[in-house]
Image 1 (cartoon, rainbow over the protein chains, first blue to last red):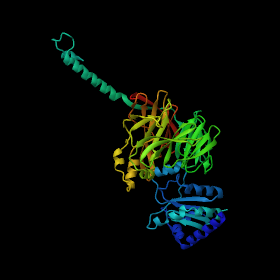
Image 2 (tube, rainbow over the protein chains, first blue to last red):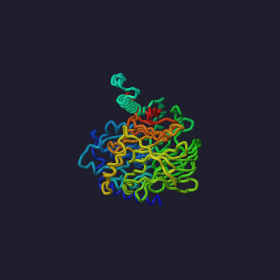
Image 3 (cartoon, rainbow over the protein chains, first blue to last red):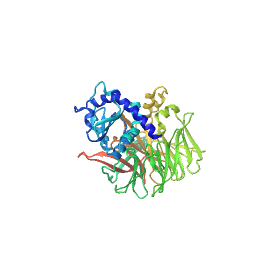
Amino acid sequence: MRFTSAALASVLLMATAACGSDAAVQAHRLTDGRAVGQLVEADSLSIVLVYPLAMCYSCSPSHSRWEEVAARTGAALHLVLDATPDTADRRVLAFQRIRVSGVLAATELTERVVPSELLFKRGKLVASAIGREQVSSKQLWMVAHNVFP
Amino acid sequence: MSMIGTRSSPASTTGLNPGGVVQFLVLLLFLLAVRSGESQSLTLRELSLVVLQEDESRFVGEPTGLAQLANGGFLVSDRRNGVIHEFRPDGAYVAARGRRGTGPLEWESGPHSLHLADASTLFVSDGGRVVQVSLPDWKPVRVLAKPTGTSLLVAATPVTVVFSRVDGASRTSLLSVDVATGARTVGGPWTSQLSRGSVAVAQMMSFSGGTVLPDGRLAVAIQHSDSLYVGPFVGGPFERVNIPVGARRGARVDLVGAVRDDNPASVERAVYQSSSPETMGVLDRSGKVAIVFNDYTMRNRRMTSALRVSMVDVTARRACPDVSVPVPADPRPIAAVANGKLLVVVQEELPTGELRTVIRQFTLQPAGCA
């Protein structure tokens, strides 16, 4: 039953990925000039999370759930924020040992790609969840159990 | 004094010069007023600092609860990591207790506040449930579902926990639950000026503190009241002691009166712009209690909190105006009152940029007010 659900979720999420909105996420520029997709290394498993700065990372199970997947699979975990943390934000993130890989450069598309979760295998996108509804559905997390060893 | 003598009437044969007596009384009242003004204060004296041992794999991410064990060690609940950290009295790391999950010694959304009923009985508030743990072996005893619309206030005894709740008639009351039998009794109530709908939205019921006094009575502070309530509550009367507003914002009943159910912003204002009691505890056998208040400020949608503390002498029915606790407001400090002291777990950044988590300990010294 669990496998069936995960498989169905895989199909749905792959279809979403094929629609191209994941391409918008990967192409979105960071404040340092790189694209989000450039965070991913070619030979590794990678998880890219594009979350709001204002998210409560301790309250939300999302981030910690992906940390557990990363710890279990050896995947690299990249957190991209939608706004630059100020000094106090950086201090809180540092206390919580939450490392930030980049910050989205604000464009008219930014709102449409936050939040997003993307899974990469050997540098290629294998599944994604884009938008609040998909991200909160946990489907991608279920998919991760299949697509990551 | 010389003025009194100068203005004494030489015609007085009794020695009771009416003018002089009046002046003397005026002076006496003045001196009493000055003395009263000077002495009605509370000061904090800081004791030794305990630096908690942390590294990259064992660290306090976001403290949400604090308690001191009978052996002097500390428990710090950590929502970021989903564990309760146990430290020795000197701050050395002992162990991480529990983990994320839904099992008996697992934390669903917390762990949050920690309530020691005695040296061997710990109740942990964790989202919609309360987990009872036996110490020092950390054996889970039972898991209680929190009754709807309540929050855990205090572990009154090893077998009784008390929740604050708001009922359908908009009254705040106390719900006492026998954890062994599940038997419930209701005490209070105080009239709540918020409807249950507003309260549920704002989760206001969590903003209350309570403690058990040496004589077995319960002392409770609730948000939107500047008083401490003392009594058996269940089936009996209760007393009320006013807590003068010092540094804190106070109950702000004006904001409560402005709440409209169809206006969530008005609820937020009432809840977050008024002081809320966080915790309290007994300081000595005479019935003096310390009450810790939060003055919240949202910062980038993150809650920060300025801590204030007051002392109430329940027996004499007197209280000190609250004073600021000299700790950073961001990240939010978490306080506890234990063994006659105010304890605060604080995450601080040193001038060198080093981040550390410490327990700061204070004694409260009242001068005339409690």
